[in-house]
Image 1 (cartoon, rainbow, N blue to C red):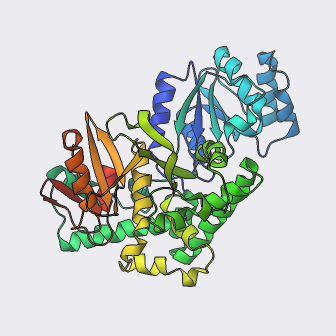
Image 2 (image 1 turned 60 degrees about the vertical axis):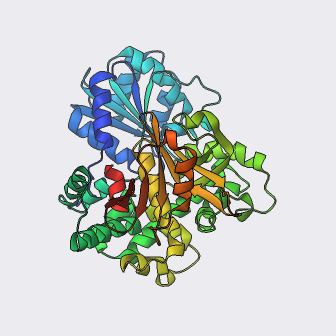
Image 3 (image 1 turned 90 degrees about the horizontal axis):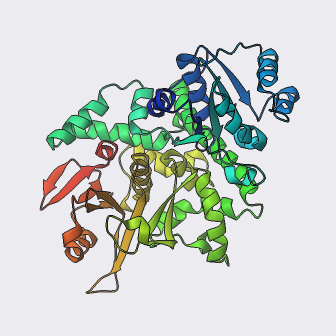
Length: 446
């Protein structure tokens, strides 16, 4: 029995490319390793084309690799490709998949001429290793339509576990601005906590469906983290990238107003991180929230590139990473999350989950800090999102949600810029004093 192919929202983006752009552009799917790029590309090819060829540059024959030494005569190129793969190509009805295309830069360079030739369609996938590091000596094709693939979001997770009810229930509650009620809210939080524990990596979800055992899921997630950290050495041979990734949970748990480099490695200069950060971001293993120096709709124009917070791209991996140095049986976060006994000082898990959900919905991540007028305390807004001409502050609470001094101070200072105000918490929905108090499971559907 083959592995399950999960329903993914990116499929609709791929359909849009096929219908409207594929005559002029190859499709480049970017994302972290093990996020499901190859699987969705093959599933799409199988369903939407008469025939397809997959060239996996991490595992293909020398004869196929050598085809790309000379793509001048495309008639002969396609003749050999069909012969070597045993697959017939049909004009306008076949697609060729370049899997792990960053491993053979000259194949990516050939995309320009293959697309111009017009006979077939092309899908490329690229992962963890920064594509730019393997393209410095080639002409990067402008004939690429790039889309990003992320870990499965909460709704995709629900589809995967066969839950066809929960997403519609939450959407209805949001539309009507109504609380779920005690029993339903407890059930919705239980399902969301399960998503946090497993995460959105397809392999982790496969393991859960096969074994119904969170210890087995944890083993799968540890293997993915090990894979990422091995690949980080290709980005940075000094090991700093891996140390920075490992220290993400510690940074968030410390409530620092920015990522503190010394927590990853003592003595690291900020300039070193500025060189490394673009490659880590292009690996899709981390998400970043920049400090907004001027909180307004154009926050990206005045972000502080040296003041930021880092999150893991998947909350399930975050939970495993936070306790990577302990055995599963010592991982208190699993037991406490599953039984809804997560202490307030572990609320940074929810912050990572919210960052992930906001980013997947198309929001760039920003936060804001300001000094208190009455004390040495620093006010911090966890996330700022823009809606129309207004900004919407969002605080994430796992403990006392009734206290929101930072939100109050921020809204007083920038009152003319404020739209909706959100306190994200683990309790039921309510509207009070101009603030939406929303349960965390509603974030993906806002």
